[in-house]
Length: 195
Image (cartoon, rainbow, N blue to C red):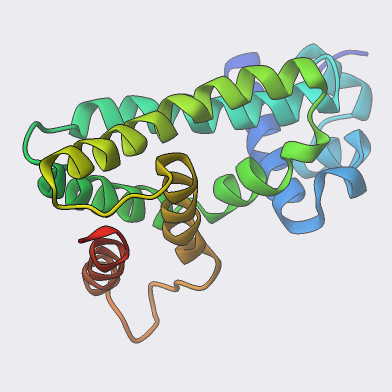
């Protein structure tokens, strides 16, 4: 099938991913059809296959894009220091980075179950790289004697779950600013791991 008039691969390809993200976040991966994605983009359903082999590839691409962007942003913001300084910086980074990405976060966490085993392994490897940084900080803090860590892996996952949860309730027009939310979360994380 031919592309819709005015459609360009460098424009339409990203629009396909963005439409899939919105629809998956709103309705869930299983409930969204390729026809719905095509309608959202403004192309014929058959034209989607010029940009993606299937719906599974869209889901995997969205998750990989989210993790690649997160890892790149994290690499640009990482600073040396004590474990306490690193943990504060990680906490504030995580909150800041994710606040305006609620759709990406929802898909990255809630739709893992819908990935094929091969795609799950690839996405999980990216997630593990991010989680490993936090786990390393927690272990450093335990070695420095400032964190009381019982199981660094469980505590890593608990901290990330707590931080990521902010995207489910935070609203820019709400009673707290992003800076205030960062401060509150940093206080909670610090208290959760401190000796």
